[in-house]
Image (cartoon, rainbow, N blue to C red; front, side, top):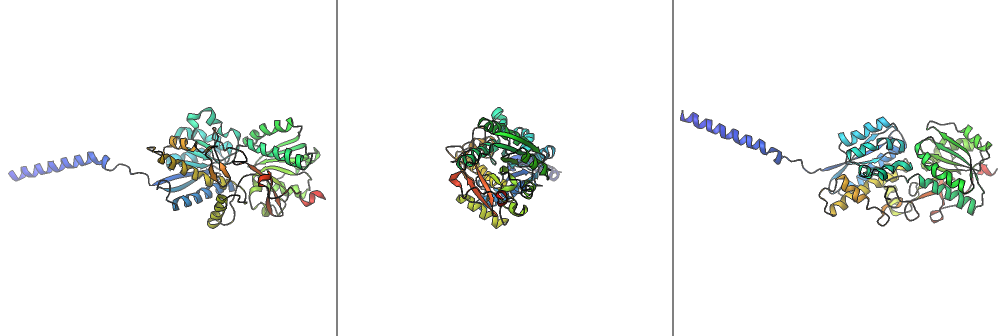
Length: 425
């Protein structure tokens, strides 16, 4: 009987120890510090622009991981496609943030889609380093800062600057230095929110200086036949056609322009022209088209970082980047890394906290620019890139004999304007 009593006591003691062990378990198995930092890339992966974003961020992650990661933590890239659809984009963004646990989002491309899903960023307090040209893209930062301070336009310049550069080239270079007297303007633009913002700036600039818009056509992204629009510009006696095309493929336009021998120069923002494969895809008919390109977004490395980026790209993927978005989004991840590491150096208790990261991203400003493939990059108070000769701006380029030549501004020009041979016939 005594032995049985002793046995019962031992059982009770062991049970008590087990219970105490269970009570202490949460303390002993606290979640370890994150070993991986997940970065989400969002964009239209059914287009070259989204593909370029994804490949650029993956390339940046490779470089960062080889150099020790972000505060010693490996970067893992997860991507999702918007398919240029608001509902699909919202689902994709929530998956990246809520299901995958991404700390930062990079990409976007379509301003209209991005604006539609911005509230998710405010709700989840997630950093988004985006691209997109619509001037209204960062209105949310100005109007409701505390909710939307997590949003930064880290890629394409605010579309307002496209108006500045196009007008500068038209007024000061072509009509000023070259004496062209191109005053009757035709406009071919995307039927999209971003072009409305650009025209709201460009139109009064033109009218104030005596230019007349004789034609303005908003085309859908599915447009492949531009013949009627080109004939309309000809019949309206336009001196020059300004293009604002990002969603619409400009290659059919330049092919028909050359085939029809429409003797009206093309100048503007045509994303298709920035692609280094544009010469081949247009069968050389792009010769003579003039287009704007954000500094660095063409295969002319004007600084060491751009040269290194193109070298890394060739080694990993071969050739040149699929689209201009690659240049912007490559550096976006490095900006995030810099902000986190600066926060850690300053003694922040959680340098990955999104509100903390915002504070340090905002330190990339006019007096403390960040070196990128495009030059000195700085954020304005509305989280837009700062435009200017000392920072980044758009270059006026032209396809000539299979090569891209910068013709304006003078400080970076690699050649002079030259019309296609058939235009002087």
